Image (tube, rainbow, N blue to C red; front, side, top):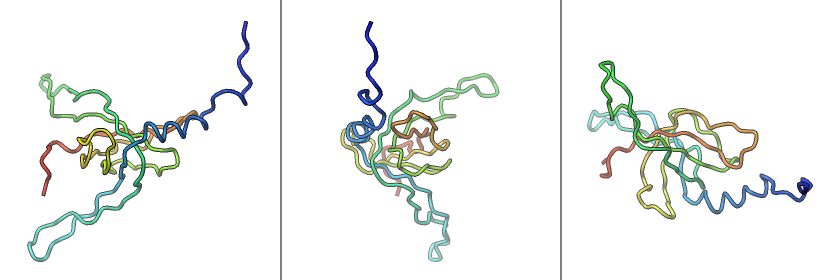
Length: 149
């Protein structure tokens, strides 16, 4: 019968964190709060004000399944009622995102399809006693591949 190694010889979360940050959190993400609407006096139209950036740094976006389906009042499945669910992974020292903050990928190392897509934060991140990264649940806002001008 073997005995487990003493704690000083085992793999610790502190030892895993740098590996995760360099091998998994390989994209650059931005968590931001959209700016308030500002009236353009020349056009008379409200336009988005400047965003407040909460965090810019390493992160990763992972899908959590395909589009969801919910039942409408008449009992029929309605595909557009919910969007795709995603998870944002960031280092533990990154600031917490608030509900309805938004996330975009500004540099992607593997999939260029991530760049400039936007997600809405569903809730502040999961809290865990044994965490290596912060996990935040997202809902995709971007619904087209053509840039909105």
